[in-house]
Image 1 (tube, rainbow, N blue to C red):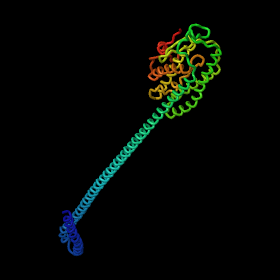
Image 2: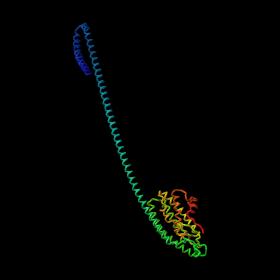
Image 3: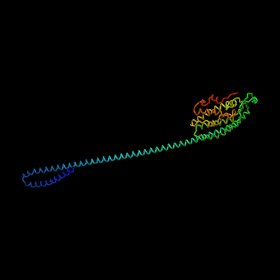
Image 4: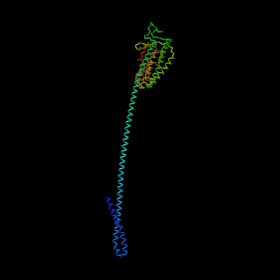
Length: 385
């Protein structure tokens, strides 16, 4: 429709142009001929000029209308161009938005895939860690079982060695009279039936017991080194400290026994029952047996406490303090076997109190754990006769 109007306007403008071109020629002819005519002809020609002027005005109007139509057409074309450009811009924006959404969707998919891969890797690492922990736990369990087996074998060997040593000690130990001396066998210097030792007899007995003690001490050095290696493998740090302390005390005992000198006479006028048999000792020997119980309790308490701190099982008879049982021994007054027996009686009760953190058999007083006197009385029932 717009093009048809534009075409009609153009045709009208062309016709007006032709008419406009012809009219001046005619007018010039008329003006030339009019010079020769009278004034009345000039007056007659005025309506024709007015007509031409009107035609010119109409042509100008048509030209103005044509210009305005062209301007409107141009504005319409510009508006249409702007509209097309806006549509194209909107299309481009939509395309860009779709591209951005697609890019965001791809990035999100990549992030999800990366997160999934990361989760899978973490899961695989956790699985590998669990498997490694299980293997380590299984290895530790097997190592612990092997260590417990070795420890049990070592305890068995220690018990066998201790039993063999007891047997050897018993063979070498002087025989203690089981019954009072009868009047038909009078004792030296008394008529009450107890055995009496003079200084020479006392020194010979002391030498025999000291030799027996030193033989035991020689074996202890090798056992100490072996047990320390075993304890280090078991990571029993608290018990290592306890055992080192115990051995230091044994070394001091050895020096003390080598340097000790006693010259008083001894009389075995105290009697006690052990294992269904009567045993005889002196007043000093009775005090030594009571001291064996007390020292055994104290050492047992420390050993049980060390095992509890190391997380070790209850096992008092595998402790070297229990197996050795000679801390505080004095060779003058009682035999080593007798001392060992009562030391172990106290050690067993002290170990139980130390391991369970209780005071069933003893008490803590002035920085020292000591056994109750009533317990000593039940273990060693000794009387003077």
